[in-house]
Image (cartoon, rainbow over all chains, first blue to last red; front, side, top):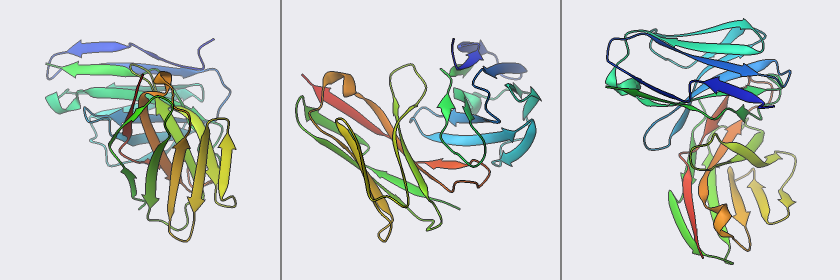
Length: 113
Length: 113
């Protein structure tokens, strides 16, 4: 029943590793997002996809690569993880690009050690 | 690009008192202003929003006001309860502009019983 679900909820990994976070929405929305929330709770958009197409890429290092196999899924792959990547990553979805109300998932707390 | 400033960063009130959080934005083209509540360990959730053709909107104990001329908007919570304790984010966006929202830095509200 969860509208926007992301896995895993917690991820602890070593520097240099590659990891993925998965996101799925069952709301029938066209638009999906990835946000990063740092330790100070600041929330910044990273990517936005609409119908599987990338429409926003907010100067995120190219170690971060989003992939949208279909409009219900938006996964985030991170290569060569760094300590500074530690944060909570939120997936969200929106009806379409004309309506910016976002429905957020529960977040994935990534800790790089 | 859009810049959203939010104040205060922390707010502590006694149960039953009112709480006010203020945001200013820079892009006069912004026309959609949502407020999100983030409880501990959860993703942000929309609690109220306002569009630029409206000056005020109310939903039970919460209300939002918008001053387009001054480019600021505020969240008002009356008769606060301990369960109102959370981090609140304002955001600004242009409906139809690729779905991008710019968030304020958040306000941690604590309601003391």
